[in-house]
Image (cartoon, rainbow, N blue to C red; front, side, top):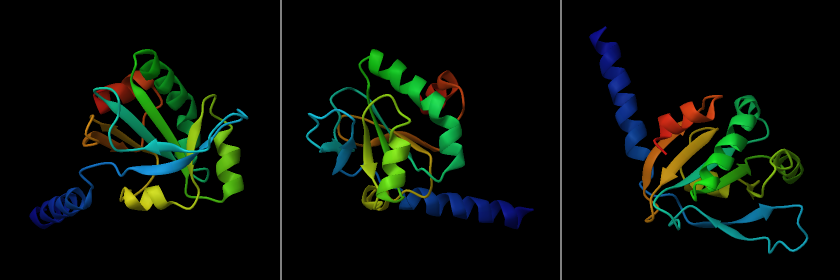
Length: 157
């Protein structure tokens, strides 16, 4: 039993040591059905408010699909309070990413080639990261809850 606890502790330490301290600053394409869209938006790095949220999802992720209603509700709640949210859809073909992006009633960022995913050293999806004005990760979570209020409590946002 002691060896198992030691192994678990070692895995946690390795995971935390490999986690980035800051969200990377990347220009990603914005998926929008609006014809006036400029096609670029920055994700990660400094945000305009005290806290910001970045959510990374993928079309092939069944958990991501199950969490879509919660993510939409969470984005609506946070943005109504002036908290900026970036939803990033990635890690799949352009067609799959754009098709999945249509499920959101707001503009999302696309990362079909996974460049941002790799730069952020993500280990899986869905991924939620709360950052401060310096882009430092305050709290993050892999996975999710189907209730937006529970997710907010977990992320402390």
